[in-house]
Length: 248
Image (cartoon, rainbow, N blue to C red; front, side):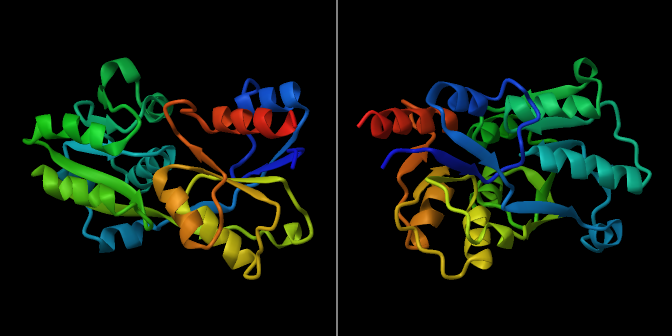
């Protein structure tokens, strides 16, 4: 079946040059955006209950933009000013770039991995004298603490925000040719909102192995997987698939 409509389980892109808009222009498909999950900050009282004191740390491990936002939110609410010599270890260039929202980039010690956490661990292990804080969601991929545990560094996890299911019930009678997911939580949200969901002719696209695994574990067929060597981004994977099915 040809692809005419796509629902991406993320907020609308803020960047007008988003590659999703290129998909719309080049292949005449309709792309809608709707976050299947959202995050809510954990209160400072709850953070303190985790026995987290920001002044005890010399380095921060940042795996997402949400981690950045909630780290500095909690710091502000605790009236704690991040020291100029604090070291930041960012999982990707996108996270490191986003950090500029809060710190003067050129004046800080910022270390950047190459997208995945195992690559960041290699950098972290070179700084074993540091005391690391890992700001995270209540739903953290188990491989991350496992990798840190095996690294031999001194680290503490701090849950600063929660991943919540968004209300999607208004979409009950709306159907798309492709649903695009970026986390296992998105799949969980799908079934919490629509317990009787049947895939039928809908194609499922999933980014990241944990998301692909969640799709299959839920009894769905994953038709489009990313990243791969050929299609390192979701939009590239979608375009490849659309070219194949729409030419028939």
